[in-house]
Amino acid sequence: MSKKRILVLGSTGSIGKQALAVIDFHSDKLELAGLAAYASVELLQAQSQKFGLKPELCVLTKQDGMDAMLALIDKSQADIVLNALVGSAGLRATMYTLELGLTLALANKESLIVGGELVTNLAKPEQILPVDSEHSAVFQCLLSGGVGPALKTLWLTASGGPFRGKSREQLAVVKSADALAHPTWSMGPKITVDSATLMNKGLEVIEAHFLFGIDYDDIKVLTQPRSLIHSMVEFVDGSTMAHVGTPDMRIPIQYAFSYPERWQSPIDFSIDYRQAGMLELAQPDTDTFGCLQLAFDAGRAGGTAPCILNAANELAVDAFLKDQIGFLDIEAAVADALSCFAGEVASLQSVEQLEDLDTRVRSYVTGRLIRV
Image 1 (cartoon, one colour):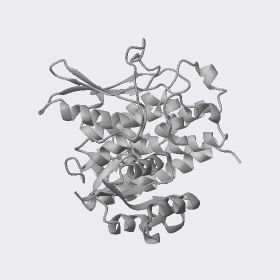
Image 2: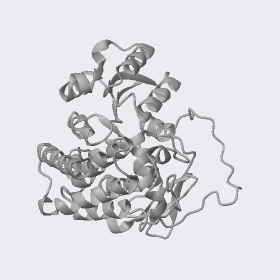
Image 3: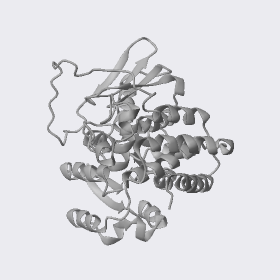
């Protein structure tokens, strides 16, 4: 059996590094086809040397640009493209991968949040394999749940992040270092802050809507502090399937690479289900953590509204990580941008339309948040 060739976009980030660990662990089944990273040149060089890649199969996007990365997708001869880029910058890579007919292992949720129907209209059945743990869980439950219109409700789970149970008064004084101390997952800084605000779960709601064609009224969110239940699918006959597993991103990454097969896990794991409270579930506190409701609102508004939500959030999270604004200012910035640009919400037409709107939203939020 020939090896699957994997192209890793965003190789120096958290998902990218874990993907390379999976490829290394299953070197008898997987082969690295190429690497792209934003700016970490020394780490990119080290990764390239470890896997014996030719220099022309490595791209530094900050230096070489988006066109070079798109050319890499074309010339890498990959079977699977892992899009683990951070933020809306991943949209063009997602669309080009689909246009070429390649399998897309999608870890860049912003592609679907911003691109919506532009992305789903390009994709053939099972051409997009979700890498987010929650969407991988839904995908696997649906595979086992039967055929036909059997789905009733999707239950997405959130850990609640490091601030679960805190009041808004307490949140007003937290710092970026506090937000980065996630209790269960090892992730990059942007997604870790999104988890703390519950925006990450809101973005995943929008992503689930597009991935699985599910109405927003049929997507529910629960907190599960141990991060063992990754999602649940409720069917029309009253049955519910839950995907339960160790909170380690190498597992859903590997499944995207191995699908439709299952391979030996690259991690040592043991879950003692006899422990009390192991699978505790609760309603999220959307009064304290308002970003989740903002995401639902933007998703229901449709069109370019999720693009506005995403651009404002990316800019605000970056400012928070630089200690330029407070934690609650992230939510305020997103709400302000959605209100300001509400009159410009339109149906999706092109990537250029989205990139123009993204730029204008970021400029607006910068002017409101960061005073010189």
